[in-house]
Amino acid sequence: MTIRSLIVGCGGYLPERSLSNDELAAAYGLETSDEWIVERTGIRRRHLAAADETASTMGAAAARRALERAGVDASEVGLIVVATATPDSAFPSTAVRIQALLGNTSGFGFDVSAACAGFVYALNVADTFIRSGQVKTALVIGSEVFSRIMDWSDRGTCVLFGDGAGAVVLKAGEGQGTADDRGILSSHLHSDGRHGEILLVDGGAGSNGKPGQLRMTGKEVFRHAVSKLAAVVDEALAANGLSHADVRWLVPHQANRRIIDAMGKKLKLPPERVVVTVDRHANTSAASIPLALAEAVNDGRVQPGDLVAMEAIGGGLTWGATLARF
Ligand code: COA
Image (cartoon, rainbow, N blue to C red):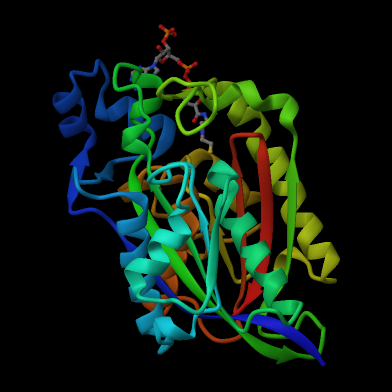
């Protein structure tokens, strides 16, 4: 008998304000066009947080929806792991703030910093706590307010990101230790700090004392993305004795439609088996996978027994993949 982390509920939260590419360009005086953005990225719209919304308020909203779907009371949660690059403050952590908003006092929480790969990292951390027997029920949340770290005069980055939050509830279950088990089968994480300069926030919550903004060398990031993501998904499949044909759904990090399509092709998945939200959400960093997963699970696309592959790459560079059977 093996302990497995079952994904028993998913929830998402998006700020009310949604802007089309044209509306964004007009609002921020950007020299860009809907055509350029759609052609290069597939992005048509993004949500932007209201002034009083933060990573913790949005994360708590997503968490409440995930808990409701799971039929789990907030008091039962033993661990809250939040992936975010835009915490409300350096401390208390976003996880602890969310714990208070949910009214939980028995568990513990902390944040994970791995940029756009943060959700896969956080899922691996929570899964490890569950497998070790230390925790029975966990909340894993990705919540981001990238609109606060944008350089709104840089059209090369500010059109690419959006705000939002997503959450999943994990519960300890039993399996046989085979790839047929329900729950998280395995996660595979990587980082390579030598590439830190191609995607970073140049200040902010860190110790270098100036407000930070996101900087990116888009072409370089693109160059790394598909090869690293394809390799890590293959690594995850091989670790479980599975092949591309076993994957029912790809729930990729939603950075760019061209990267998503290339990954679907590598896995030989028909386009309808690849969950896409980037057109409506843009890149919500660590929130993008749980937001996409919440859509596909809650609208009934993902069915019991389906194998879901999740993959992400982000600043660091950090990247990883998780396989989970529903
Ligand atoms: N609207 C119009 N033109 C724009 C623009 C915009 N929003 N942003 C950049 N441009 C211009 C540039 O100024 C440049 O003009 P120039 O040739 O006159 O100098 C031209 O478009 C090409 O810029 P470049 O950055 O080389 O474009 P690109 O083809 O690499 O596309 C990205 C840019 C960002 C769409 C692309 O590199 C990408 O998707 N990278 C991956 C980014 C990513 O996914 N990051 C997140 C990972 S978590």
